[in-house]
Length: 245
Ligand code: OAD
Image 1 (cartoon, helix red, strand yellow):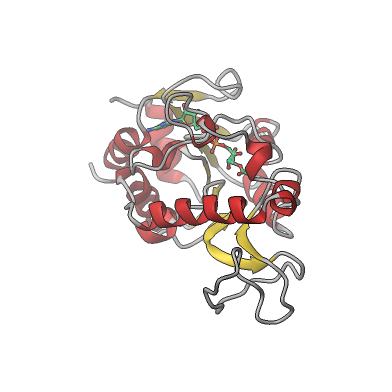
Image 2 (image 1 turned 30 degrees about the vertical axis):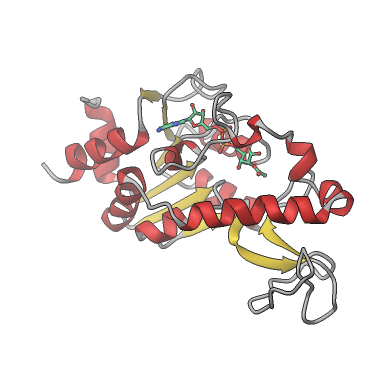
């Protein structure tokens, strides 16, 4: 794939790059996205049946077991060239922030350092009542297991529909986008707010905006450049064209 000279030059001179990723960047690692009709995680369930506090109160065992199934699946997957390319870009620019909607930990595994997990991390567990992370807990006959501190139910440390984002996560991300030279939106359908509002922080400031996706999204009409294709193919080519030639 060839890239516009404007993009190459801007990336080479960029002081600060901010990237927003969604499930699409993990698709090539074998992690199902949310809205792929044929294989999406929601294909057999409805989000409101699983990823909400109400669903958890209604059927804690089912919700806990669904997340444990996903946790075990995600333990088996590996970062793909798209994740590694972003970790490489972070080393090339003075300031880099990766805001991910993904809870699969793959950006960390690929070596990305400055990451905001705006929807949490499936490998972390917290107490449903205290809303505090629990590092050590025992698997007992109780499903979900119980908090060693207060006896409340444990849950995955991920953001459910209708819940607030981690304190400060959105504000820090929006501030970084507003002060970036280049903003990427990669592998996200741009449908779920407030994460989907982050790109608009770039548009209002005339920051070079780039979308990488296998399809059009509500963002496509607004970005400066839409690169159509697999993130795992486009990103390594962009790194080579910008920093390795
Ligand atoms: P979606 O499943 O909504 O969208 C995935 C996007 O990635 C789609 O636009 C696909 O076209 C694109 N895509 C798929 N494979 C790709 C590839 N190899 N390269 C590039 N793009 C690819 O997932 P998200 O946008 O991440 O929230 O969903 C946002 C949020 O909705 C999730 O974080 C989750 C979900 O509800 C919570 O759980 C709170």
